[in-house]
Amino acid sequence: MKKLLAEFIGTSWLVLGGCGSAVLAAAYPELGIGFVGVSIAFGLTVLTMAYAIGHISGCHLNPAVSVGLYFGGRFDKKDLLPYIIAQVLGAITGAFVLYFIATGKSGFELGGFAANGYGEHSPGGYSLGAALVTEIVMTFMFLIIILGTTHSKAAPGFAGMAIGLGLTLIHLISIPVTNTSVNPARSTSQALFVGDWAIGQLWLFWLAPIVGAVLAGLVYKWMSPEKE
Image (tube, rainbow, N blue to C red; front, side, top):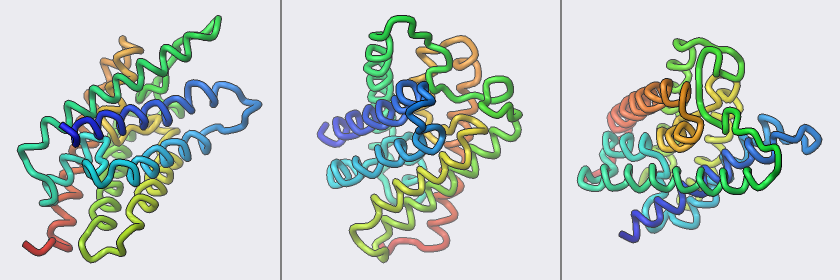
């Protein structure tokens, strides 16, 4: 339960910090945070939680990360579903807190609410195919970073920094394409509030990250297996 609570809190923070920066701060051009600021915010949520709860739960904060670590031989199968449930519930809670804060301003319009999308709902108008490839490749690389920096042979103490910066880079690349998911829990939480098209397109933001994570887990396990 301690591990699940840590994942719940951490994923709530990821949504509140990352999506919150997009919904609350990026809405004001005079603040000047834009895509870059939102990218940094997402990276900071993971970096801060890596050092806060990494020793408790491993700081997955993402169903795709849990799946990738399982296929990479780093995570117990019996913990997989409980982790995913805790992450999704945490993300929804973070989105609820964000919604409550955002609606405290008169005239607030929900809009996209930092949801992920493709086609006409892609920030840059990118196609379904482009979104699918982007999410698979970005999640693949994210898991390669995670598996590499947490390997027993990696330099200790730096994994959180590398993973946080890696997520920042991923957002800098892919926000224009899909608004960046690489995390089914984060996509689900925002889609539930937006409804309509966001729910209709949510399948891609579960499928693509999971596929990318599975591929990364298998590839890294082959490249550099941990000793039994």
